[in-house]
Length: 192
Image 1 (cartoon, rainbow, N blue to C red):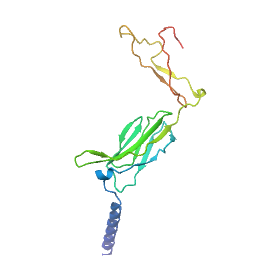
Image 2 (cartoon, helix red, strand yellow):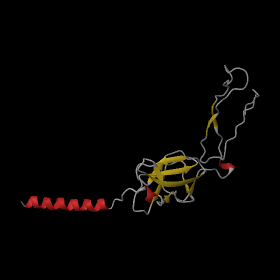
Image 3 (cartoon, rainbow, N blue to C red):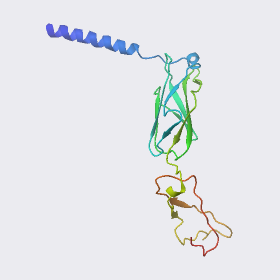
Image 4 (cartoon, rainbow, N blue to C red):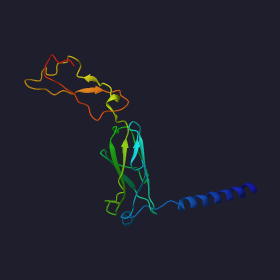
C-alpha cells in the first residue's frame, strides 16, 4: 500500500511538472502576429571577422510571445535558406570565400488559412567579413598549374578556330590574393 501511494504521488508530481513545462511553450504565431514579428540577430556579430575555412553558426532570437513555423535566412552574396521548424539557429558549412564581406538577414513565416506563406518584416542587416586575404605581396606564393597538363594539345578534334580550355591551379598559401591573373599566349615557344 505504501509503495502504491508513493508511485501515485510521483505520477502526480511528474504530471504537474510536465504541465508547467508545456505552459512555457509559445503557440504558433497567427498571420496577424507575424506581421509585427521581428527577429533579433545575435551572431556572428555585426561587423565581426570570422574564419572563412570553418563552418559558421548563425543565431537569432525574438521577443514575441508566439513562435513562427519557420525562419528564412538570407546570406548575401550566397543564397537564402530555410530552417527546420522554428529553430533560431542555422549552421552553414564550408563555402565562404576569404576576405569577403557578407550581409545576412532573417525573417520569420507562417502559413495562412489558404496555405500561403506570410512573412515577418526582415531583421536588421548585419555584416561580417571572412579572414584570409593577404595584406602584402610578400605573403603570396606561386600557384601550381594543374590543368591543362604541360604540353597538352587543346585544339585536337575541335575543328578550325579557337577552342575552349579549362584552366585550373592549386594554391597553398596561408592567405589568398585579391585575384589570380593568368597569361596564355598563342606562341608555342612560350615557357614561363
